[in-house]
Amino acid sequence: MTFHELDNKLKISFVSLRGSIIAGSFGGVLFGINFTLQLLVGMFRLTGASGFLTGLTVPFFLAIASRMNRQWGTATIIWTLYSFLAIPTELMGVPGPYKLLVGFMGGLAYDVGYCGLKCKPFALYIALILYVVMLSLGFYVVFITGLVQDIVGGSILKILTIVPLVFIIEGMLSTFAASRFMKKYSRLFGL
Image (tube, rainbow, N blue to C red):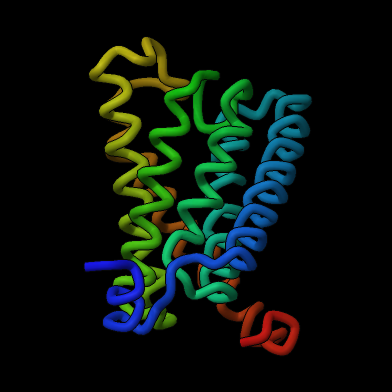
């Protein structure tokens, strides 16, 4: 099946040049905001606060970008760019190129959840759950394969249980806030 046939069958197009530019912009801005928050939190030595804040900003931006584009690949582009920029930083864990694989998997899972359910508003929440599960599995695979010896924040058990639950809860709240924000400013976003 070609991309064009799949486009017609799903009534959702693959990301266009315009959509790629929007997604790339969102990925860069999201990285800039989260990196700035990480630096500010680091000044006050608040352990875990950067991850908590990232868990609020990422779903907000993913929801807005996905609703604006409504195209396969939007979240994948955002997260691949974000992961690339995060390689030398402490965002997403210890510095390293493994972040590209984890980010790509998370973005792809979000796209599958959102676009697979034909871009309905409730699909943002399903996409968020798939995204968090896939990120957790990605970090688990990276850990068990030995690509990363140390995971920031503690044990692999915490990475697979507590952290995803917290991210899902705060991500749901953030996605709801993004939905309300988009509804209020729908003209601005072309929705």
